[in-house]
Each structure stands twice: as C-alpha cells, then as structure tokens.
Length: 82
Picture 1 (cartoon, rainbow, N blue to C red):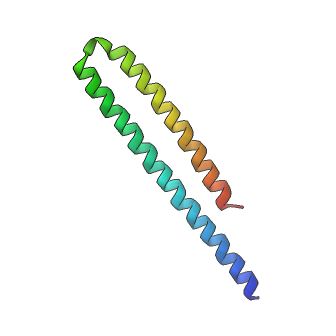
Picture 2 (tube, rainbow, N blue to C red; picture 1 turned 60 degrees about the vertical axis):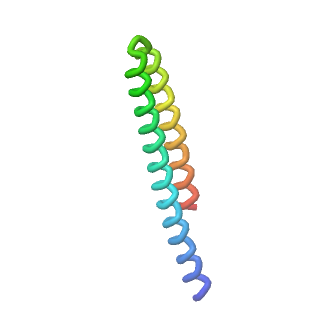
Picture 3 (cartoon, rainbow, N blue to C red; picture 1 turned 90 degrees about the vertical axis):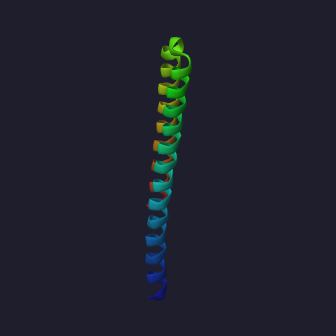
C-alpha cells in the first residue's frame, strides 16, 4: 500500500517537474527572440541600407529558436508522462 502511494507521488512530482521545465523553456525562448528583435532593430537603425539582410537573418534565427524550444517542450512533457 505504501509503495503504491510512493509511486503516485513520484508520478505527480515528475509531472510537476515537466511543467517547470516547459515553463523555463518558454521563458528562455521568449528572452532569446526578444534579444534578436532588439539587436535587429538597433542594426537597422544604424544601417538602414542593410535592413533586408538583417530582417532575413533575424527571422531565420527566431525560427531556429522556436524549433529548439518546441523540441525541448515535447521532450520535457514526454519525460514527465512516462
């Protein structure tokens, strides 16, 4: 009986940890994309003629960060549900 309660507590703790991990990933991705946007705006303000290249590079970097963040959230949720 005590073993079953311990297993349930462990499963709940794993789900809690997965939620914390997914939250940390979302915060990190948001901060990273925000820094990309800030740097792109500053770069465009300094060199308006390079706006197209800066914008294209920042969109690609933001997409890569989103992909990594999605992968990390999926992994944390899969680990939390196992």
